[in-house]
Image 1: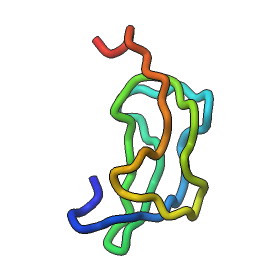
Image 2 (image 1 turned 90 degrees about the horizontal axis):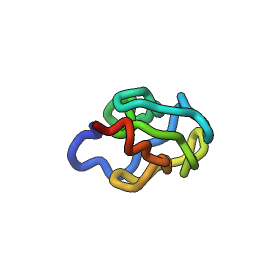
Image 3 (image 1 turned 180 degrees about the horizontal axis):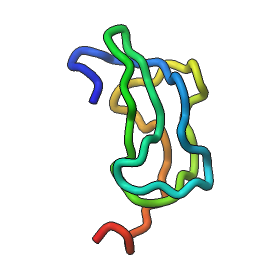
Length: 76
């Protein structure tokens, strides 16, 4: 989780690419704010469809980082 008051963070690295299957809590990427570096994990099981940012881009907190085709069969 990004600290309160932070509005954007820099994408340091991606751990996934489109087509990769992820499970809940798998590492998606590492980001850095002016306060700390943080690993972002998946909230869902599914397949990565799109990365919304490139490495070094500034991502807006609260906006999607990736699109995931959620596998409803794995959500039980």
